[in-house]
Amino acid sequence: MEEKLVLRMTGLVSLGMVAAMLPSLACALNQEPEMVLPFLGTMVVGLAFGAYALRTTVSQRKMRLSIRGGAVFLGLSWLYTSLLGAVPYIASGDFSVPKALFESASALTTTGVSSVLEGAPYPSSLLLWHDVSQWLGGIGAIVIFAVIMPQLGSSAANLFSAEVQGNSAERTMPHIRAAVRVLFFLYLGLTLLMTVVLLILRQPLEMAVKLAATSISTSGYLHYRTYLTECNDPLLELVLVLFMIIGSCNFILYYRILQKRVDVFWKDTERRWYFGIIAGLTLLVTYNLWRSHFYDLFQSFRYAFFQVVSIMSTAGLATQDFSHWPAFSRLLLFYAAIIGGCSASTSGGVKVSRVVVLLKVCWQEIKRTLHPRMVSVITMSGRPVPAQAIIGVGRYFFLYFIVFIALSMLYSLTGSDMLESMATVVVFLSNVGSAYGIMGEGTTFEALSSFGYLILYVTMIMGRIELFAFVMFLHPDFWAKKRGW
Image 1 (cartoon, helix red, strand yellow):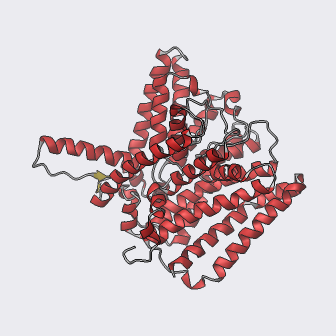
Image 2 (image 1 turned 180 degrees about the vertical axis):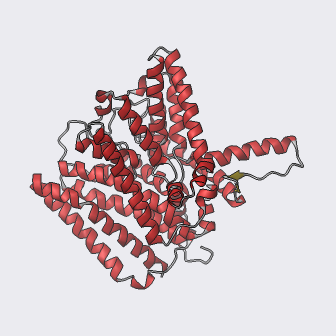
Image 3 (image 1 turned 120 degrees about the vertical axis):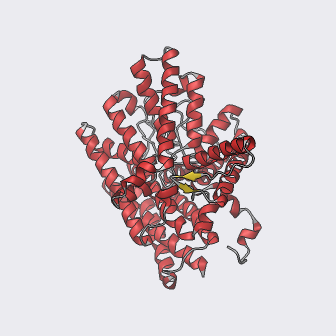
């Protein structure tokens, strides 16, 4: 019976994808008749599957998912959307299957890279679909981790190491439909607000919409990659920084603000650490750039602040080619890419809450060694962190390390050297997307082999669906129908 519930929820996702393709279909009808059939055919397939899933699962509307069902839906939804989203690329005739999967997953996981060179022929309707799917991927991540996962209960939350957020994680969200509606309109409202602000700054309408969508979703992909460098506008950069931070903070906190519980926002441990890490990294990078005589003091702060926020929020936008910065600054950005943003946000990475819990565990063990009889409790936002969640955080970091090593070795088979392989895997596993450091900010992946595209496709999906869920799929017991899930 639970398989039918997963089918029903995937059907709803399919209908959402169909609706998101309407602007691209309209663009194709207006400008590119050859792209009408690829989009129309994809929409028919998605609509047919969605209609079938809803018609055959009416009785499952009020069921709840188990841990196993939640993991299946988590993996199946990202896999299905990336496959469906790749169909227009394949049907256009300009993309191989691995390249199309790479392009689709890059947008939907908000990784924000492209296999297409700037200036290369790229159908406008496909470019629009890439932009729309980036924005869609951001709200998809929020809904799954802020609404779907809490429905599985505390045991599932501990398994995925999400139940470490303190007051922000109180399960007082309304019914799932109401919760999705609230988060969707909040996400849409922030996007529209940023678009208006950018229009006030005299940005062209098309670029204002794209910048808003890529900042709030922290996807960071712009087909015109040197746009921000050419603008050279400190005020524009400040607005982008503000909304990248908004997109990478816990959206449940915004819901608390709507409930007039502003104190929850200010007391949230993860949010305070996130701001503190950004401030600390910015000061260190600023000092390093200034002492290395790259820029004057003001410019050093300006570029450091923007780049730290961009990388840590996993947006990956850039105003400078930071691959030429001092090694110390690039290493700090590397660390920021691993950490990522906050839980229940559009950001990727290991998440600040996990890093904070692990640091508190380490500090607690040091104090316990000095004072064996001391009793202490690890808290987040004034609430004790469950022991199972602490164990889950430790397991997550070990698993992250193992996956990082394995994927780096596999990617090195494409001919990349050791450091380039490691840097590439980090930015794709964290969904940062920027062609980080060693490769140069403007690098694309147009010359990658099919094997390389498939490795990075899997890496992006793993980074978005949570490592535990992906690894669970590989265990035979997961597919055996046993009690206890």
